[in-house]
Image (cartoon, rainbow, N blue to C red; front, side, top):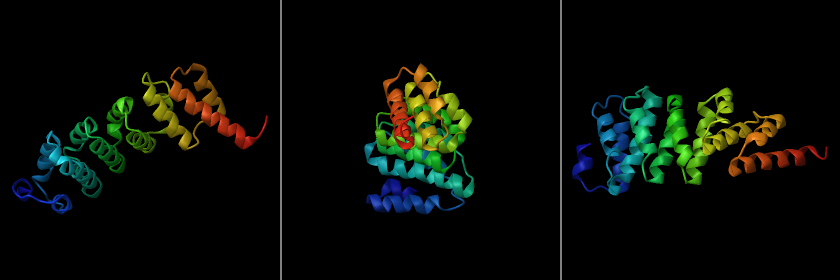
Length: 193
């Protein structure tokens, strides 16, 4: 880790150095280093920040080491760089960190990047129960309702009656559009009534 702060490494060398440390079971100063890296606003550290998020998820999966995971993911989800927010959503998903779903929902509420929004509702689909996603259909945040709807429709967990009930009370045009598109698709699949 000292090499990273002193040497001028290429992005590939930097990545390999971080992952060499990240794959070691015993890496006492690693969590602190990764946490500190994520706190930096230096754009030159973006690769280190992305790798830090990925390594923390890897360590949670491989070694059940979740020290600093939640606060690092929360920090990364609020980062101005979309690549880092995307890495955080993937890390939460891959490390199966269901306790971070509220933070994920906060991101979805304001996320302008369509790819990150897609990754976010896919993570929501994997990390929350059908019942929890159904409750989110009545959330006060339209983007959260949209994410819940997409996740439920993806896994065929809503009926036409469910979607009709949603349409009767939904005011957000994006949520309505997805529900209406799904309804039209179902009508085409089943033929005329």
